[in-house]
Amino acid sequence: MLLIAFRTEYQITVDRAQNRIFYQNFGPMRTAAALPHYRDDWNAALAEVQPGFCILTDMQIVNENGGALLAEFQAVEQLIVQRGVHLVAEVHLPGLPTRRYTDAVTTRQAMPVEYFLDIWDATQFLDQLQLHTNTAA
Image 1 (cartoon, helix red, strand yellow):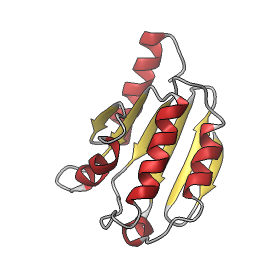
Image 2 (cartoon, rainbow, N blue to C red):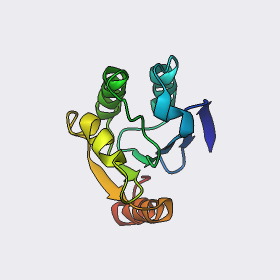
Image 3 (cartoon, rainbow, N blue to C red):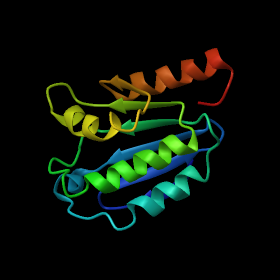
Image 4 (cartoon, one colour):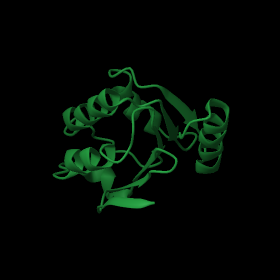
């Protein structure tokens, strides 16, 4: 795994062999009002994968006041779509409104998203997808 960014609010790593990005939000994301390196970090991650890549996202902690950051999130989503994402596997905790917050971004960009309740299930799904499509996912 290649560590792209380890910020107070999030982490981004890349597995080139699987053509997969792993993204995780941390607690300070809930109150973040600015993410000065966010787009640059995503550009660095996207430069490490090939079209047809997948993203595993741990979205158990999401910015609840996303209005301030919505434009930045949407710009990154557009970069991801333009780079040729195959699938995004999002992990959300049941009973929390995190999916509603991420849907405000992803539905506008036509992102191919599957939803999961834990990281293990999402990882297994992506691994199986890779086996069935005979590609790195």
